[in-house]
Length: 189
Image (cartoon, rainbow, N blue to C red; front, side, top):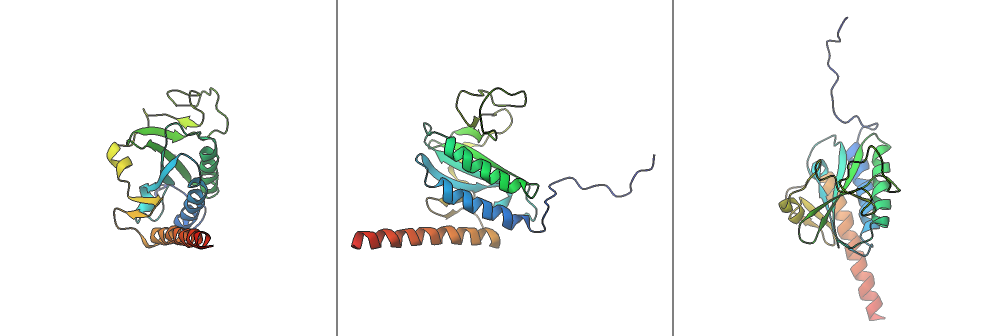
């Protein structure tokens, strides 16, 4: 059997030349939707989009929530983010933490929760839309407390950001500036 002298590179194989821009736009849309949900305390960016990595494999978002929050709407927005990433052969994960820096798990990628062979959640079905696969993925309290950047309720940079990610932050800061102006104008009238 003849072997190819060139080994196929393993790793993400996006279907477009600039996957970062596509993923960052999808994250921006997710933040704009999720920030209005009751129980969402903070939205932060983790992973390769917070670095200069040219071809990330996914978008990683950390959402700090009130532990009693209904996850239905957040799960719907998370599936939309994942679906947008999947259109270019990449992925997305929505990690959940609470206000005490405890990692809760990830948003389940299934629309309806019921027992599945492929489900790796430790307590599948106990809480709708929560994939507590803590045996597979675990975020440290330090990362939950201080992720590379907060996207909402205010932008916080904890490290140097690539230019394309800075553009995302500028749009979010502009959103907040416009909101504050609208609030001030409404109070003046």
